[in-house]
Image (cartoon, rainbow, N blue to C red; front, side, top):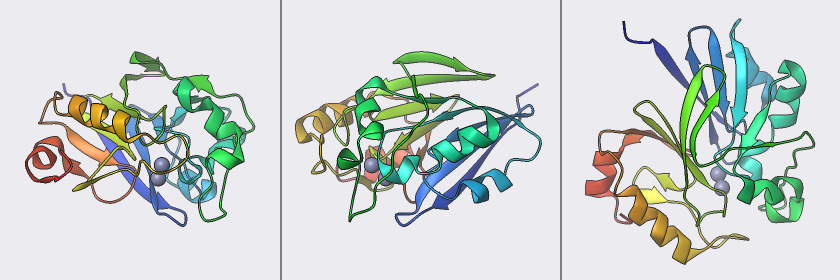
Length: 201
Ligand SMILES: [Zn+2]
Ligand SMILES: [Zn+2]
């Protein structure tokens, strides 16, 4: 029998960053809780929170991390190359808004990460930030601020790199086109559509 999985998208904060809840078999994984911890937690019924996964360290994706960790006791995971960003407000602020994570953040490493019942395949795709990752769960790809519907993430922010983004986009073209893409902002899409229509790919 196929495993029933539900993906809930909750846009939060000034920049409407997409927080995703992935629910399966009474467990939930939270991706990028950027703001509005209470609103996000209202979507969690009696599921066990297996963890918080961050696609990268910018303030608009991390603002509710401490509050949710405190409320649920779960752990938070982020690629090591963005650890500095979440501990230093100067590196993740925009228009005077910033955020910081005070709890310990664990390493999300490249390859397979088993977090609770969820098996995540992680690809480090720098350019927007050094530790930006694509997170693949089954046939779904959470693309953070690397790839958007018909667009890509900025490379002009602190620690951004146009050259690295070019390499990351080249890598994205090697992934399975049938993947459904859930970006850090805006609507979901498919990799096949982006490969055909996104001017940056
Ligand atoms: Zn970002
Ligand atoms: Zn963002």
